[in-house]
Structure formats: C-alpha cells, structure tokens
Image 1 (spheres, rainbow, N blue to C red):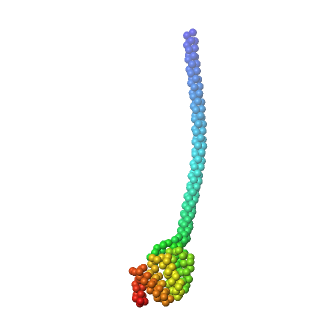
Image 2 (cartoon, one colour):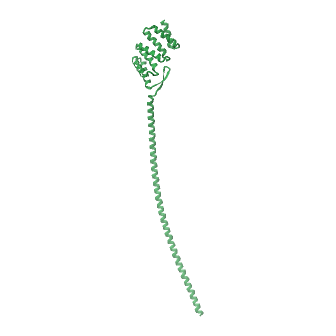
Length: 252
C-alpha cells in the first residue's frame, strides 16, 4: 500500500510537473503570439504613420508650391502695379506740365489785353495794349519827319481813343504835325483843345507858344502878343515863358 501510494504521489507529482510544463509551454506560446501580434500592430501603425507623414509631407510641398506660385504672382502684380504707377505718375506729370503751358499761354494772351501803366509827359496812367501800340506807332512816324502820315495816324488815334490818357499829348503832337504841314487853323484848334482839356499839362506852355507862332504865321500880331503875355503870366518859370519874353521884346 505504501508503495502504491508512494507511486501515486510520484505519478501525481509527475503529472503536475507535466501539467506545469505544459502550462508553461502554452504560456510561452501564448506570449510569443501576443508579442508577434503587438509587433505586427506596431509595424502597421508605423507604416500608417509613415504613410500619413508622406501624405502630409506631399500636401505640405503642394502647399509650399502653391504659396510660392502665389508669391510669384503677387510679385508680378506688384511689378505691374509699380509700372502702372510710374506710367500714371508720368502721365500726371505730363498733364500738369501741359496745364502749366496752357496757363502760361493764357496768361500771356491775357497780358496782351490787360491795361498797362505808362508815363508820358510827367503823367502816369493806364492804357490798353493796343492803345499804347497805336500811339507809339504814330509817334515813330512823327519822329521820322513824315508829318503828313503822322497827322493821319494821330487823327485816327484820337478818333479811337478820345478819352485816353495819351489824348493831351496826342493833341500837342497833332498840332505840331499840322503846323509843319501848314494847316495853321487846324493846328491852333488842337493846341487850344489841349489847353481846354488839360490846362495844367506839361505841354501846356509849349502849346501856348505854338499858338502864338500860328498867330504870327497868320499875321495876327495883336493876338500873338496877348498869347505870349498870357503864357508868361500862367507859366512864368517855364522855358516857354523865357522864350515868350524874348519874343515880346522884339514884338513891341
């Protein structure tokens, strides 16, 4: 009995050992499968991660290329915009210059019609440019000694500009031209007209002396002496008055 019991224990221990070994083997086998599956799972995850990374990298590259393309497009637009701005600036500058030229031209044309200040025989006054041109033209003819043409020019000037500041001087020189042309009565009338419209004119003493000359030409000695007396009384300090005194001495 003891022997059988001991054998049974031995068998039981062996069975238990075998069972343990079997369990260990099964456990070891189970652990290898789990590890293998874990490795496979990790590998799949890694491959998926690499795939995702590759896709993200490709997407990033595409985005960078799109961004680069946009940058190049913006650079092109900016370059065109700068070019357009430069062209616009040149156009504006050209327009401004043309406006200045036009304004200068307008101002120049307006100046041809604007009154100008002149000084004649000690008097300053405003005249129209055409008026100034006509008077100076008539006087140029007078200075050349063409008294017939000067008379015509001065008559026409006074017809157009009877109220001009030039009128008293024009009357004086018209009278002189007529005196030179021996139109004595017309000359006297214009010298007298000067004295009527501008008795204080700088040419008034000379006009009175010229009237006396006309009266002498007309053989009116009495009227000539009276005119010379009036001249000395009216303008005693004038050069014409000195001439009048000399003549009065000879006429008496």
